[in-house]
Amino acid sequence: MTLPPKTRYPAYDVLAKRDTVSWDDATRAVIDERLATPSTPAFCDAAQWRAVTALCACIVPQRSEAPQIPVAALVDAKLAKNSGDGYRDARLPALQEAWRIGLAAVDEESRARFGLPFASIEEVSQIALLQAMERGELVSAAWQGMPSKLFFAERVLHDICSAYYSHPHAWSQIGFGGPANPRGYVRMGFDRRDPWEAVESREHGPEKRHAR
Image (cartoon, rainbow, N blue to C red; front, side):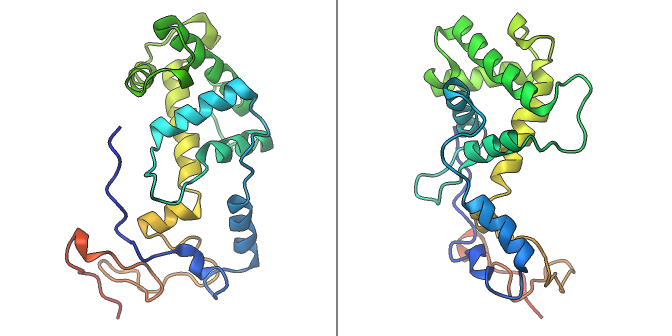
């Protein structure tokens, strides 16, 4: 899978703000919890953990030289807490049940097509299976009536990408300053930057933004 370009903000570390006026105690507590996410699953069993780890690697591949974001662990933590989004499509089961059904179905579809569970097949086959899921072409009885296309859009993409971009390492990679609490942002106009925001590397083009 093609990886995104190297970070535009090589000298930026959002965690340098931790003990500054940019963040308050409540913000620090939330971020510290994410940084301390256990590497062993609290919700998934062994087969589910292998499947969700493989799914995360396909959806948000990471460079080996970059700080690694524990995406699968963050998804598992969400499932263990059973913390929903405050809404869901009526065609989807509740969060935990949707993932239980979906992970089992992904492995079943993989065995039917390739003779092995999803985590054990080659990357090109994993991507082909995910593309079929995205198109809604996976319709085996293992889905228990849950549309595979909906599971892909509302659970796989939503939960995995949300987990990835909730982590401070991802914020540093994209130049995001994290929660604007309590400091906030002052220079809100186009092409303007507050002094505590990330500075883009000149390797990715001339620096055009100026703090005033």
